[in-house]
Image 1 (cartoon, helix red, strand yellow):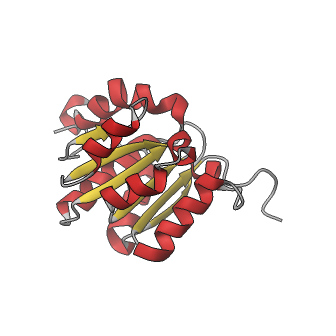
Image 2 (cartoon, one colour):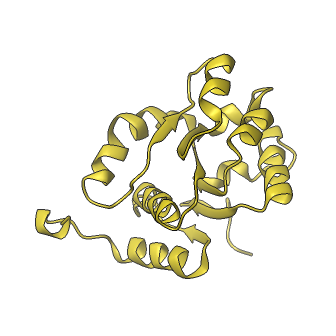
Image 3 (cartoon, rainbow, N blue to C red):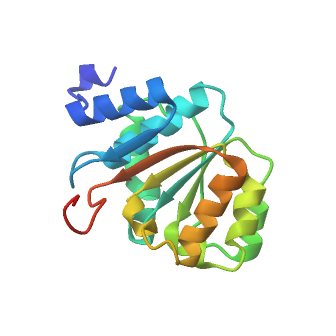
Length: 174
């Protein structure tokens, strides 16, 4: 139906989504403007279609509002997503705890929230089976609290992971 509206995925988007379908995970070093948001949202939709109940989409704080107010609707008009989104950005600790548990869907988790004292508790309450890390290079500092929290969660619970970034390395691969 999106094709009828004139929408087509870019080749890199189609390949990334196909990799997630085939492998159940994705490492996607995609250029700036390569459609990472659409990739991550479609992977959320595929995970829901495959029976996963709880997903966390981690995003930079500065794109949280645009994602919630615009991008999800734009992508939903063009690709199947099929889930409810629970934005956690800008919410009080009480509100985050109230929204965190007992639901099916995708929680939008700003990276800045990973620095909050209750971040590990919120992750445990959500207990995501899939983590989608948009702009994953923001977790490159293994000594930072937010990176340690994500790595600890992954080590303990072994979720499926989607890793996307246009700047995976600061320098060359060497």
